[in-house]
Amino acid sequence: MAKSISLTRYLVEQQRVDGLIPAQLRLLLEVVARACKSISHSVNKGALGEVLGSAGSENVQGEIQKKLDIIANEVLIEANEWGGHLAAMASEEMDEIYQVPNRYPRGEYLLLFDPLDGSSNIDVNVSIGTIFSVLVKPEGVDVSEQDFLQAGHQQVAAGYCVYGPQTTLVLTVGHGVAMFTLDREQGSFMLTQEHVRIPEDTQEFAINMSNMRHWDAPTKRYIDECLQGREGPRGKDFNMRWIASMVADVHRILTRGGVFMYPWDKREPGKPGKLRLMYEANPMAWLVEQAGGAATNGRQRILDIAPEQLHQRVSVVLGSKNEVERVTQYYAQATSA
Ligand code: AHG
Ligand code: MN
Ligand code: MN
Image (cartoon, rainbow, N blue to C red; front, side, top):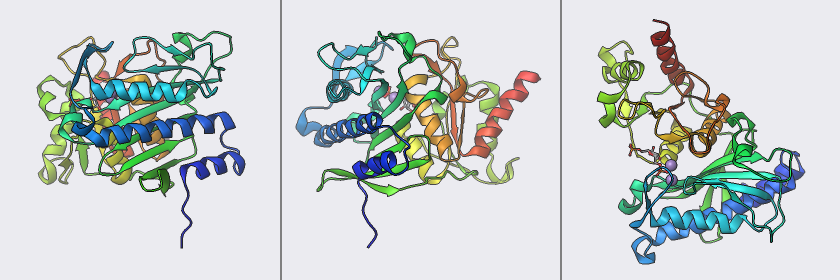
C-alpha cells in the first residue's frame, strides 16, 4: 500500500531531510493550514452556521464585505498572531498592515492573504478559497507597510486552499507544487499530488466575456482568435470556463492546463486591473511558474513587478506557457506598432 503522507509529515521532511524550509516557516505553514481547515468548516456549514450574506461593511477597495470575508480574516489573524513566527500580516480585508501585538513574540516572516477569494460565489454554493503569500521581513526592529513591498520573486512560500467539492491545499516553497486534500475523518491534509505540471499547450481559456467591449486590442485579438476555433488562425477549437473565483480557476489550470486572464479594461482606465498584486497575483503567479506555466501582466513577468502599494491592482494572464507567451507577444506587437 502506498504510504499516506500528511501535510505535517511532508513539511517535517522538507525541513529535516531536504533542508528546504526553516522550522519557523514550517510552523507558519502548519498554522495557515489549520486556519484553512477552520474556514473550510465554516464554509461547509453555510446557512446552518449563519455565515452567508453581507456583513454590511466595505473594505479598503470599496467592496461590500460578506460575513465570510470577515470571519476568514479573523480566523487567519487569530491563528497566526501568537505563534512567534510572524512579524506582521496584511490582508485584502484590512486597510493597513496588522502588526503582531506586543504581548506575543515576533518572528521574521510576513504573511499576506486574500482570506476569502470568490466572495460573489459564497451565497450560491460555488467553490471559493483562501490565497496566501509569505515574505521575509527586512532587517530592522519595527515593521512597516514598506517592508511588504517586495517583488513576487522574493516570496518564500505561497499557496491557496480551495473550498470546493473537496477542500484542497496547494503549496509551493520554491521546489515545485504539491497538493493536499483534507481528510475530514482524520482532520488532516493528506498529500494527493506532487510535482504538479501545467501542460504547455491548452484549448481552454478563462476570462469574463461580459467585459469584452471594454478590452484593449491585444486581449480582443487573442480571445477572438480562440473563438474562431478550427476555422480561424489557431486551427483548433477552444473551450471556455469562468468560475469567478480565481482560486478555483487557477486550481483547474494547475490540474489540467488552460489560460486565465483578468486584463485591464476601459471601465476604469486608471486602474491597472481588478486583481490585487500582493495577495492574489503574486502567490498564484509563483505557483503557476513552479508548475511549469507562465504569468505576466501582458507586458511583464508578474513576479518581477516592483510593488508600490499594498493593495495595488494588476492585469493578469497566467497558465499554460505557450498561450501566456502568445498573449504577451500580442501586447508587445501592439506597443511596437
Ligand atoms: P475577491 O472575492 O477576493 O474580491 O476576488 C474576486 C476576484 C477573483 O477571484 C475572480 O477571478 C474575479 O474577482 C471575478 O470577477 P468578476 O466578478 O468580474 O468576474
Ligand atoms: Mn480575491
Ligand atoms: Mn477576497
